[in-house]
Length: 317
Ligand code: TXA
Ligand code: MG
Image 1 (cartoon, helix red, strand yellow):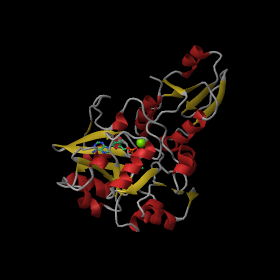
Image 2 (tube, helix red, strand yellow):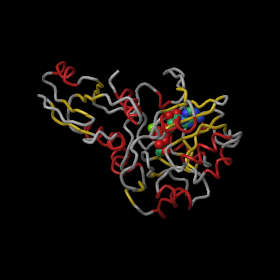
Image 3 (cartoon, helix red, strand yellow):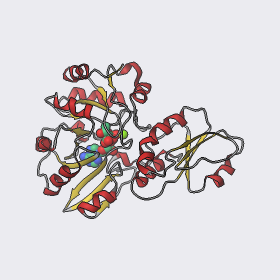
Image 4 (cartoon, protein in one colour):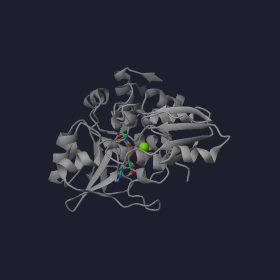
């Protein structure tokens, strides 16, 4: 059930239930991070493989040491600069943190969400919340309470409604290795914003057999409709004569035959606006009875990099 009743959400979490919560990035499927039974429920609901670790959400950077150990100074500085906000830090875990949360790794992912409802919730709980995005494994992330409800229906007793997510893309994930910043996932904080303040960020290497972070799996965030990504929409359209087509475009609609729906993400060419609307547009396209979705590649800078990263993983392989 979709509700704005925060007390109901608090009660459910204290009772060991899993609920959906709003954050500034995407909605999360949250449970008590200190309760292994609740953690297992998250995996079952999401049909998420156990090799894919969860993010722990804490109320403020003051609680970092309750989850992580051997925290490098730069991690505190980044937390101070970006939190509450869409940056997740990968740190050495405290011994008692469940292996289900970390998928057996000795590191744990942590962030402080920047959403008034999520923060009010955390401030009323005596435990942190483990929460992956509130979508079945591999599908498009939810940026509204309705997206979550459409995925899980009666399986979720509480979907706490905090409106449309302000950022619309998941958090950026950064770890630390020998004084080096490692990027595990592009996200709502651009690489440029991190580098301007904290120096060079290196991309984690990964492949599908040994994903460093499963958010880097080559197919993820995917609509069920076959999706293509291109620099030249007009050219690609020629390959699909007779098909019903949905377009995902950056800043301008297009005149073309067979195009049934078009989603233009930002007429002002604003990448923040485009990021905020991306998943909702993909959800609409996926539900619009088209045969294929063609997405235009975005400018390869700032949040455009994150949008392209998600679209790369959404495409037909
Ligand atoms: O914005 C977000 O980060 C949202 C909201 C709900 O906070 N959460 C989210 O969670 O996107 P999820 O589970 O969909 O993605 C978490 C990513 C996964 O790709 C996972 O592999 C990675 O974090 N991760 C978690 N722990 C990790 C670790 N110890 N090392 C490397 N990657 C890790
Ligand atoms: Mg996810």
